[in-house]
Image 1 (cartoon, rainbow, N blue to C red):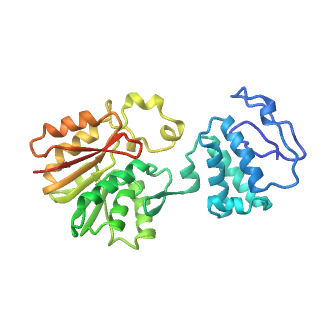
Image 2: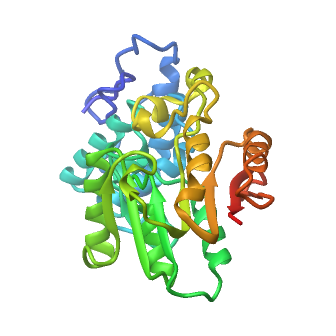
Image 3: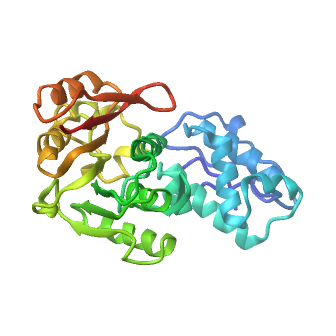
Length: 323
């Protein structure tokens, strides 16, 4: 099949046609898209060609994307591709790879194309029903587990669970008596339930409830409230990558004009749902630490808050204990 520079036709070059049609939205030079006559495609050929093609089309981590996409299609681990570097690809394998490549060129997140993402000890299913779990949230879970220490039997609630990453990780790695998770989105809860049933074995491990904020909790109290809430400011919307703003659920991203609307509600309502000495743990934006610390500091029910950094050294995690 011919190579085209349009997102809907991302085919590797073939022997019979070496001149690709021009991209109506791009000034990429024809010599950058020259076709190479090949009898067969091997993993190393396809990775090399695709990496260059994606890079020219503005896709970050182009070679890694090519490797992960091809590994997914072939059912291999990424590094195993290079143990089979000269293995001829079958026609159906190449066709499946092309389908994934076209999706990526439309700026669909790679995680949605692959259908899974690794999160701490879990391999979670992900799709457009929920936000893609990030490494920062892995740090949030780690901070909660560190705070719990050797104490067993604590009760935890995850507000805005999305794919279930936080709640399922707490259940898998911790010794909690009870783990509850909530979300406003029925679709997200369906995805979280699928992950729970596949990874933890059934509904007795984590309970799900639908609703926003603390409304699903009634008068219940917990030892830990944890949340990765929407915290992107609306003014930052234009600067987001298409993979984020065009594909992930906006309700899981944006937290009002300054990004703090949901965080304010979490802070103000937490004392009504935490036991004495309980913990509120919240992921925040990289520029929100001062505002959030001040917010908590002005609330009489909290002790002095702690702000923890993510793996990149940015202040991203709020930890606040109630008196």
